[in-house]
Amino acid sequence: MKKRTWIPIFFCMMLAVLSTSCSLLPSPRYNGPKLYDIGVPETYPDLPYTLTVLPFTTDTSARYKMLYRVGENQLETDEYNRWTLPPGSMLTKYLSVSFKPTGPDLPKAKRPAFILSGKILFFEADLTKNAVRLTVEYRIERENTSADEKPFTSSFSILEPLPNNSPDEIANAMGRAVKQFADRLKSQMDTLITAKK
Image (cartoon, rainbow, N blue to C red):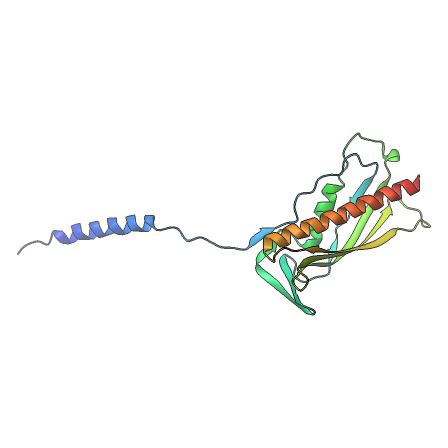
C-alpha cells in the first residue's frame, strides 16, 4: 500500500499561501468619532490686570456632541463628530489662555484682580441660517469687592457665517465666534480698568 506523503505537503503549502494572503490584505480601519475644538488662542500681551476665569456652565444635554438646529424648534446631535470637551469647558480653557498674565511681574496691589463667570445659552450650528450661534451671559467682578460695588453683567450673541455644514467648518466658525467674544471681553476689561482709575 502506497503512503500518501503528498497530503502533509499539500496542507503545508496551503497554510503558507493562506498566511501570506492574509498579510497582504489591508487591516480593517476603525472609524471612530472625529474630535474637534475651537482652536488655540493667542494670549493678550501685557495685561494690567488679572482675570480669573471660573468654569462656564452650559444649558444643553448634548455635552460632547455637535448640535445642529435643523428647524425652528428641532435639534439634532451628531454621533460621529464631537467636541474634545463640553462647550463650557472649551470656552473656559480658551479664555483662561487668552487672559493668562504675561509681561513684567507687578505687585498684586498694582495689578487689579477680577473674576469672570458665565453661562453658555447657545453653542450650535444653525443650519436654518447657515451660521453657528454662540450666546453667552457673563459677569465680571473685582476680587475682594466691597458690598456696595456692583458686578458688571452682560451678554454676547453672534451668528458667525457658515460656508457649509461640514464639521471642520462648524469648528472653524465656532472658533471665530469665540475669538470675537474674547475680544469683546478684552475691550470691556480695558474700559473697566480705565473707569476705576
